[in-house]
Length: 510
Ligand code: HXC
Image (tube, rainbow, N blue to C red):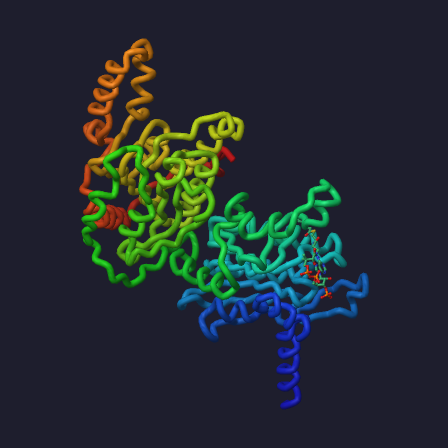
């Protein structure tokens, strides 16, 4: 009997070694943790329960019958993050480069099925050379099975991907269908095909870093939602994010204890908006001053910086924030910012996270590059996303709300629940100067007349009261009291019920 028990322990030891000590050392020498070490950092101590530790591949081609590693290159199971259940898979680069075989895929699909059944997020720690080349179509089929699960799980449970090594081919398409992708600087890459293939096919010479490093994907492609300096930081930040999210689409985000007065006044907000309407200010300041303890988990902080997206808590409850950023492009909406914010709004709506919208937007960015790039369709994504969202929506206009962008940014007309404006708000079709130059084109050669017309237009529209007279603004509020007003608004919406007409699904302008 003792011998049998010992045999189990020996087998476990062997499985824990993955591809062997030499490869583990190589992993460490690149500053990377192993698959199991990553799970240890991600989950609460001793909470991990592993599945399929002894699963082995069934390939016999190319000498694979002599290369068997228990677990087949991926560690799967469930555990907890601050006591809340999550499912995890962690690819083991020490085993055949973390490449995906049919059995490796089955392990991932198994935990995804369980996650959907039991209503808990899936966190994928990706470190994989893609489809296992020796397996051919079996590996491709395995990827497609994982993709199908990603699609079915989308909107049911949060799916988070952390890219922690070189991820190529199929290894990037599964993360691409999850809700959030985070990368590790200098050790993770994502590309459909690596630099060598790029050179062969297009003659382009590019480094892995430039082609698919963290900087590329957080600033240029927007494929990744954030990047961190090392494995430890990335995993700890994922814990922080999970703390803010609901476990599934039928439960609400957890309410955490908070140590911040719900009615906290912020006198400094009374002077946040500068006297000159063309002087920018940092919208981060407002977000942080509204949030419980100033805590803001920003999503896509380095991409389309003219709009901010991320999570805060108000009275301990998670709220998604979308805010125009006057510091960049004067806070204009453009293709990139519309796509960024639309995706964020849809995540919030899918998972019942209320949305706070902070508005200071002079309109859509004009010009050929925007029009040729399809700003009409991309801008419509944000409009569509806000309009279809049924979660509580609270909007605060701090300064400009001009033109179509006024409508788009969670206006009353798109079923905004509470639409507040600061006294500094200007709600109009466009800025006074542009408006005057169009309506009084015939007087353009008389600067004095135009100046007077501009002043008249400003007096009439550069305020929140015309909109308030029509009920498009529910209340003009003192900036210093914004936290209190917004907290009370969300508190009153906790039992909000609103649904859209029955449909198979909508046809958002993709
Ligand atoms: C089998 C693989 C592998 C793969 C790596 N290995 N990728 N084994 N299938 N796809 C093995 C290597 O043979 C090596 O084994 C070990 O993993 C480590 O790999 P190295 O090359 O030594 O590591 P490194 O220099 O860090 O380079 C990592 C890498 C590179 C960038 C990922 O290995 C690479 O380019 N691999 C191929 C990537 C690729 O083209 N994948 C197929 C994509 S097609 P030993 O025994 O020496 O430790 C695809 C189709 C799906 O995924 C599409 C669905 C839409």
